[in-house]
Length: 120
Image 1: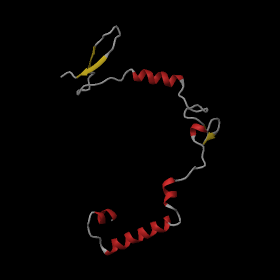
Image 2: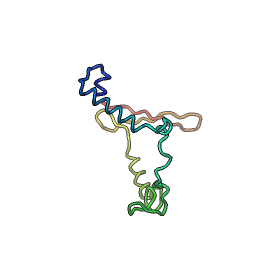
Image 3: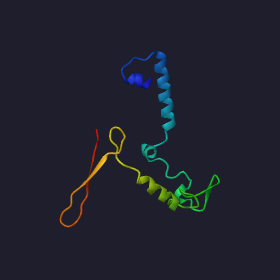
Image 4: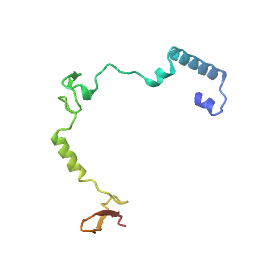
């Protein structure tokens, strides 16, 4: 109804009354709070962040992003991520691997520039 009113459409008497009741309710709920408090929000929820839980538990699970208080991935996860990263390559419009060209060297130091072209 608020959108309807904002778009310039007329509201029925019943819709106007409902909208006014909703505005009044909202005003009652927000009274007593300053605007700064609303923007700032709560300082804390009283709960410990998972990354700081260390040896503690939450719902039977140990703290840390990877359990047992660890926030860094295990070596097996890191190795798997590295393997998957090597598979990333640009594709052409037909989702085929794009041709990679290497060019350039000079001054005794090799510099590589990659240019990906699309095969038609």
